[in-house]
Amino acid sequence: MVTFLSGGTGTPKLLDGATAAFTPAETTVVANTGDDVELGGLFVSPDVDTLLFQGGGVLDRGTWWGINGDTHRTHDALLDLAGSMGRSTEPTYLPESRQTAGRDIADWRRFSGVGEFMTIGDRDRAVHLTRTSLLDEGKTLSEATAAIARAFGITIDILPMSDDSVATLVHTDEGLMHFQEFWVANDGEPAIENVEFRGSATAEPAPGVLEALGDVVVVGPSNPITSIGPMLSVSGIGDALAETTVVAVSPFLGGDAFSGPAAKLMGAVGAPPGTAGLPAVYPFADAFVVDDSDSGSFDRPTVETDIRIDSPDDARRVVDAVARAIDLVE
Image (cartoon, rainbow, N blue to C red):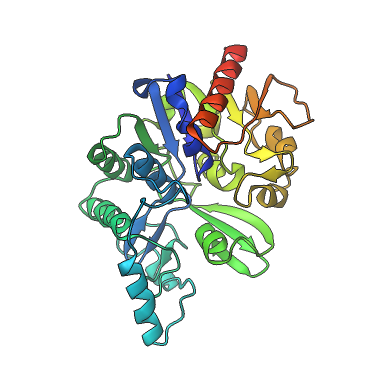
């Protein structure tokens, strides 16, 4: 049995090759929910959705988010309408008093949909409508995720890290921003001062998460700070990882990340940017899988391979390296 910790696009790309070593029946994926937002009244869970669309065979693999071939008529109409109203298309938080109104949601996750700043396809939106309706019926995020996964015919277990609200907030030189505002609306350009996981102090792991972390855990090549960090901020998850076998796959080629602001974020939290910082952010890791071009060394077992993943064959190569790393430490 193996459990993957997933966020962003890195770990989903790795999962393309997972069946080379692990069957769906023995595979669980715990997904980051720190990126979740409510936009225009709809609950959007980007990292969960990438896994759902991938497992359902509909993922847009050009972007690694959204649904392949989706249309964007509703999104375009919202922008047109906002323009006709003279409204800005910049991210617009609802008032502070509305951040926790209605369904339970952490402060600084709730945005207006007028001129929505994230591109949401029409079929993609149907998933958010369904999730939001299930939550409003009284279902938990775990229950809603499982129901949608069944509808997509997915056979691996996909678990949100928590049913409680955790919001990844980036403190920048231009003010406080939700991660989606920082990364999507501002292209990750503002200087980072700190990263906060609001709500994590009272959040609990979702049902099944701690049990899944009793198996061998693979930390995928996701952003260590904003994809994996929110999970580590939830009570009990870090302790569970310290007690089990963990292999961490580097998302870096030396000091450079494959995608996203991972290196920039590492520096902001005081960790060496790039591969060299992995032991600092993953002190519980028993082994690492790193790129064969990296010259650094760690004080624990390390397997080297070409960790770039541009195809299922690449993913199978990296998964094979993961399996070899597991053998070294089990």
